[in-house]
Image (cartoon, rainbow, N blue to C red; front, side, top):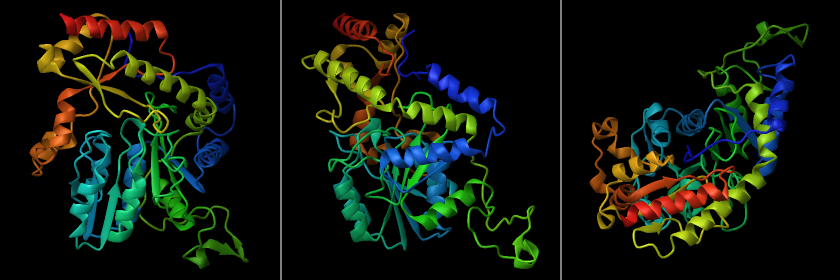
Amino acid sequence: MIPYGKHFIDDDDIAAVVEVLKSSNLTQGPAVGKFEQDIASYVGAKYAVAVSSATAGLFLSTNVLSAGSQETSFYTSPITFVSSSNAALYCGLKPRFVDVEKDTVNICPLQLQEKIFNDSNKVKIIMPVHFAGLPCKMDQISKIASDAGAVIIEDAAHALGAKYECGSMVGSCKYSTFTVFSFHPVKNISTGEGGVITTNDQNLYSKLLRLRSHGINKLNDEMINKERAYTDGEINPWYYEMQELGFHFRITDIQAALGSSQLKKLPLFHSRRKEIVQKYHNAFANNEYVSISQQNTLELSAHHLFVALIDFDKAGISRAQLMKALSEKNILTQVHYIPVVLNPYYENLGYSIDQFPNSNSFYKSALSLPNYFSLSEKDQDYVISTIENILRC
C-alpha cells in the first residue's frame, strides 16, 4: 500500500533510541533538554518545552494565556484538527471560528479583523493554523492582534521547517507568544507521539515547565514554604512544592532522542517533500478535474500535506468512490479536514457550517494525496496516472 503519510526511520534514529534505553534515564533525563535546545536553536526561539503531544501544547498555551478568565475570546480556523479549538473548550472558553481564504486555506485576516474589532472581552487569543505547512499571513495577523490587544498562539503542527515571508522560521515566535509543533509519525519529523512549545518569554517558559509536570516547582522557582524547604540555609534534598494545579504532559527521553536524531534530517525531508509537491503541481496543471490548493507557496511551506481539489461533480464520481477505487489500486488517501464545526459535538454547541462558505467549499473538494520522504518517483508516477485514469472513466 502507498499511504498518504509515513514516517522515516534510519539506523541513526535507532542508535539514538538504543543509547537512551541503555542509559540510566528513560524519562526526565538529559535527552529531553537536548531536544528542546535543538528545536529552539533550529527555529530561532529562546526556549522550547517538549510535551506529550501537540494537543497538550495547545492546551497548556491556552491555559497560560487565558489564566482562568471567563472574559476571554478565542479565535481559530474551522479547517484544522479538533485539537486547535478543543484547547479553548478545555479551558472553559467558547471558540470563535473565522473562515479561511480560498487560496491559502488559512484563516482570513480581513474576516478576523472584522470579528475581533467589536470584541469587548479583556483577553483575546488568536490561534492561526498553518494548514498543510503553509504559514498564515502573520504580519497582518500580528498587526490585528496588536491593535486589538490580543495574544497569538501559532498552531504549527504542520509547519516545522516552514518560513514566513520575511524569512524568519516558523517557531521563532516573531509574531506570537507561543508556537506549537507536532511530532506525530506523519508529520515532518516524528517522536512517535509528542509536541513542543516555543516561546521567547522566560516567565512563561518557567510556568510551562511547572504545568507540564503537575505544577511542581522547577529550575529556580522560589520556594513558598521556606521553613519546610530549607535546613541550615540549604534546600532539603527531598523537598518539592506543588505551587499550582498542573498536568502530566511530559515527553520521555526515548522520544526526545528520536526527535533530536530526526531533526538532523529535516532539511533532507523538506527538500524531498518540496519535490513531490512540485511534481503534483506540474502533473495536474492542465487537468480539467483537478486543481491545486495553496499555489505559489513552494518556498514557504513545510509541505506536510498535499491537498488536491477534485471537481467530483464534473468527473462524475463521488469522493468515497474515488477513494475506494484508489484503495483497490493500493493507494491510500485522506481528507484534511472535516471542518471542526461539522462534528456533532460542535453542532450541539450551536455552530453551523453555513457560517463558513470557504471552509465548506474546500472540504467538499479536498483530497490529500501521498506525500512523504520515502515516496519513490515510481510510486508517485503511479499515483498520478491512476488518478488520471480513474477520473477519465
